[in-house]
Image 1: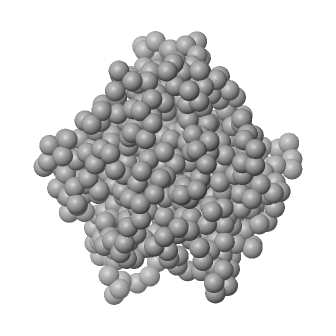
Image 2: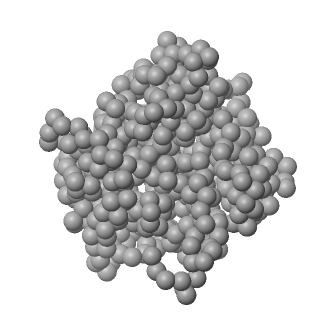
Amino acid sequence: MRGTRLIKLTAVALVLFAWPSARLPVVSSQAAGPRLSGVVPDPYTPIKPAQTDFDNFAWQVFVALNWPANPDGSPDLRAFIGQRPGAPRVWELYTDPNDIFYKDGCNQPRLARRPAFEQKVLSRISKRIEKLAAGTDTQAAANWPLVDQARNFALYESLINDTQTNYICAQRLTSAEKIGDFVAGGKKVSFPFGSLEVKAAWRLFPADTPPEVLARYHTREATIAIPEVQPTGQPGSDAPRPVKSTLTAKVGLVGLHITYKIRSQPRWIWATFEQVDNYKVDYKPLPNLKPTFSSGNAQPGADTNNRQPAQTNPPDLHPTSYVWSGAQPTAGNYAPVEVASCPNEVPPSPVNAAWQERLAGARGVANSPWQYYRLNSVQWFDGRDRIQPRNTDGAAVLRNSVLETYLLGDQTIANQVPAIGVVASDVVPFPPQGTLPDTIVATEEANKYPEKTGTYTWSSCVVCHQMALYGYAVKDCKTQDVMTDYSFVFRSFLPQNNKPSTCPKG
C-alpha cells in the first residue's frame, strides 16, 4: 500500500572513519556555535578533528533533519524548527527501504515513494540486532521489545535519504539475484557521500497524557499496524507482513540515530540522540513527572536494569514471543523494563546545554519540544591508520537507552570492545580486532539468560557495522557474501539466500 510507513530498527552501531585530504580546508563547527538551519550540512565540508566539533556538527544535522517538511520532503524554510507542531519532519519523509525492495519504488516518480504526509503508519515493536559476520553467522542479541512504564510497546523505524535510495536504484541492488550480478561484474557496494540513514524510536501516549508532558516531545498522530506475525529477528524480517489490526494514537519521538557519510569521514559518522525523560527527569522537571522507561528508582549498576520484559500473565521471566493487545496498554501482559545507563557509558555531550538553550529561545516558538532532546555522543575516526573509533575520552562505547537497551555483558565481555577502559582500573586495554567474534558469541550466550548477563554495555556501532554484509547466494554449501559499506539496509529488508537443510551445519 503506497504511503505505508513501517517502524523498524536494525542494529545500530558505530563504524570506522578516516580523516580528510590535506587539500581541503578544515572548518570548525565550534566556531559557529549553535546555528539553527533547515539545511543539512554539506557532506564535502571537512570537520576539525575534535570531539566538540563533531558534536556540534551532529546537532546541526539533527536540527536540519527535524525542520518542518514540505509535502515533497524538502525543508519548509518559511517555517522554523519547532513550528508546525504535529507535522512531519524532513527525515520522516525519507524512503522506507520496503518501498524500494517490494513496491517497485525504483520505477516510480520520487514523490510517489513519499509516505502519506499527514498520517504516520507504524508497525515495528522489536529492536533486533543484526546477525554479524565475524567468521560466524550468529544472532548477536535477543529479539526483545521495549515496554514503557505505561505498559505500551515502543515503536521503531529505519529510513534512508534520496542519495542512498538513488544509488540502490541506479545500481539495481533490489534483490539477491541482482546483487549477485553486481558482484559478478567486479563491483563493490560503496554509497556516495551524502548518504544518510536514520533509525527512530517512538513511545505511545495514553489518552490521558497531560498537555504539558506532550509539549516535551515531537509528536505525531499515528496508525499503528499490528502484524499477524511478529518479526523473527532473522535477515530480511523487516520485510512487509500481513496486518492483523490497527490502533490510532498519538506517538512521541524518544530516540534518533543518525549515520551520515561525508567526504572527511568516508566510513561514516554516527550520532545518537534521546529524549531527556527516557530514564530520568533532570532537565526542566515538572511536578510528578516520571521517566518514560524507568520507575525512577533504578539504582546504577543494578542487576535488574535493562532486562528482557517478563510476561506477567501467566508469569514467564523469559517469554519467547510478545503479542500486542489491540488497545492500550498494548503490552498489558508484560512488565515494564527498568531502563538505566550502564556503568561504563560516557556522559552525554557537554555541548547539549548550549543547543538546548538556543532551541528554547527559538523565534516564534514557545517552549520548543526540541530543547528536550540531547546528544549522547558521536563516533568518528581521526586518521587512516587508526583502527579505533573516537568519541568522548576516546572511548568506543556509545549506547542509546531505547535503541540498544539490551546490549549487555559482564565486565570481561564489555572490556573486549575496542578502546573501552576497565571500569575498576586505570589500565585501558586495546585488544586486537580478533576479539570481536568472541565478544559477539559471548554476548549472544549471555543474553539467553538475562540473570547471568552483566550490567556493562558493549554497545558500539563499530562492533556491528564494520562487519555489515549480505548473503546473496549459496554455492557448494557456502554463503556468498558482499560487504555493504557499513549499512544493514540489505540484510534488514531483503531475505538472504540461506544454505539448504542438506548442507552440513557450521
